[in-house]
Structures are given as C-alpha cells and as structure tokens.
Image (spheres, rainbow, N blue to C red):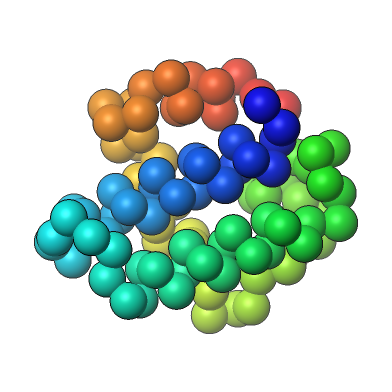
Length: 97
C-alpha cells in the first residue's frame, strides 16, 4: 500500500476513535468530520508524496495552527489506544520510518 493511502487510513481511524470516545456516537460529528477532511486534504497535497516521513518528523508543517493543535490532541489520545482497536496499524506505524 502506498504511504499516503496508509497515512489517510490511519489518521481516519484515529479521528474516528477520538470522536467516538470524546463526543459519543457512531458517526463523526461535524467538527471531527471537518478535521478528517482537512487532514486528508493535507495528505493529498503533501509535497513529499510517498517518500514522506511521519508527520511529526516532517520539516514542513502544512497544517494551520488551529488544526495542528486539534490533530495533536487526537494523536495524543488515539495513539496509545490504537494498540487495542487497530493493533496491526499501530504495529506498522511503530515499525515504519
């Protein structure tokens, strides 16, 4: 699987987990849907393409400051929980460059 496609799937899972646990409900709320759409858009326009590293190691910060803070909160919350809800993706992330 291409790096960008994998990143998109992973960030979508993380946002869905965040929303389900913090906002309650099976569907994404409008705020989380906007964050997911923004994140996927940023990945579509990543200048590094499939040669990209993990976003937190990237020299270019392509997120707006407000969205960057939101995605950081999501990552901090969802990252450890990914081991329980999506263990193969979590393991792949830990082993990736």
